[in-house]
Length: 440
Image (tube, rainbow, N blue to C red; front, side):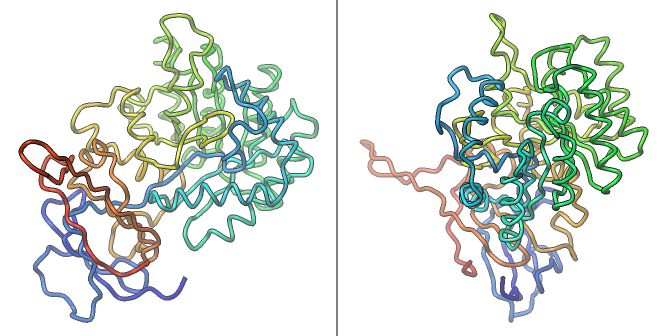
């Protein structure tokens, strides 16, 4: 990317302040943030946000870029279960090549860039003697760096102890450059294997100084309780903020007495949680008659307990989820529904589940629209978070290190009635006008 210009974003709204503001950007970092109307240097190039909402970029804390764009190749997941998805992926994995992985990952990353995502944590299957997908993704990480910060989780899809040489492959992935240690204890052959696999993952994380992101209890079985082991190991090692438990869908089925005891440990440990609403609501409850479980972790209760939770996609157009375009607002929309977070303030604050909370999980320290931070932000054509979620607005501008990297023109609707023609807005207030700014 070339050097960022000196410029100013005007007529912009901020989530934590009333009124309209202007944001200065100098050398790729945020400068002064001042109320509209205050004098500014005439040499600034100006972008008129037309009353749009500026927020930090969207973060994707959990996706599988090595499997993306493979739905139906060679067969579709007909049962809609996690386990058939693993079987279908095993078929497709036999066809992997270096360029195949890169091409598919890049396609979805481009979708994410257009949708305002600038930080991505991808889980990459290392249950493969050749580590083909990992080696390809390490190249993608370097190539995409000007637009997306990519973290790679070494993910033992078929187990650490239940797959031949699983532990050695996991360690080799870390030596090659994987950023995060993964595990999948509930998929190991036995509970004992599951617990031992977590001890191995934590040992490797400390040996190589890496955070952990565990696929944990992604099953409807109320007896799947590996999250307590994750939390206990994190607490003992004093590394809770560097540990993430992804999915934990079994928590949906835990009894109240056990959950009460568990939450005390979770709070003490300081670990993070990622829920994946689109995929969790699709894959879980498949073995139920009626009533059917929603099968998503206890997001509302975790948040109320002061435990960090964020939302991710998990999958985009692959054997586990046949839909998706990399749009984090779709994830949030589903999550707010299935977690019953539908009060006005819950919806208005919901953007935190795909921004600030995700930044904590990601381990970002200079994230946010604050003077001195890298000038990374997106502008939504909405006056607040509530309207952005309700109308599922596009990302009007995505700005990274002071440069526009993506733009989307809001759709325009026109209706014709007996009262004549009318341009239609779905916003409560007047539609936001288009604006002209620096070119990407």
